[in-house]
Image (cartoon, rainbow, N blue to C red; front, side):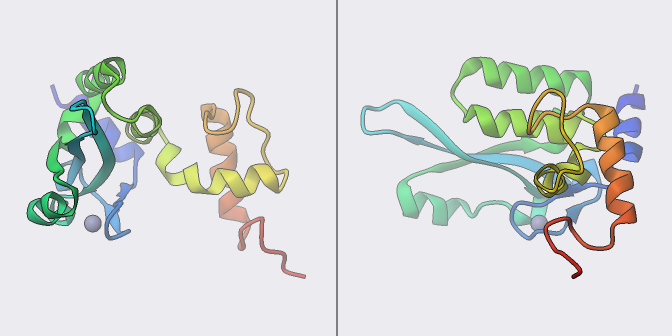
Length: 163
Ligand SMILES: [Zn+2]
């Protein structure tokens, strides 16, 4: 039953925590959270969608005091595997949460190698090392592999010249 979760675990070194910046190294240690408030016309407004350690969650009282936002969220475990992907797709379809943030979360959780390479791609693309076929932000597995190899062999990021 847990095969999907296990393969997810081995194919990923973890996720960068949006709060402390350290790696979330197990699914159990992670949480997806967001802030829910109301706009001026009483319409629900969701912002601040992020993936963090359980211990790095938003402070409920502080967020409420700041702009009357409620902290909501679910364990990372709910977002992995086919059921997790379906949940993310349903959130995209509901159009309440920021779509770009949800798409990024889908890629980070479900595309092997994306989390490890997503910050490197910009340098690699603008340095001419990779030209993504689909487009910036959407990478083929072969391109992700290529980038991992490229990153392993280049000591410095492409944007820094070693003179
Ligand atoms: Zn953290």
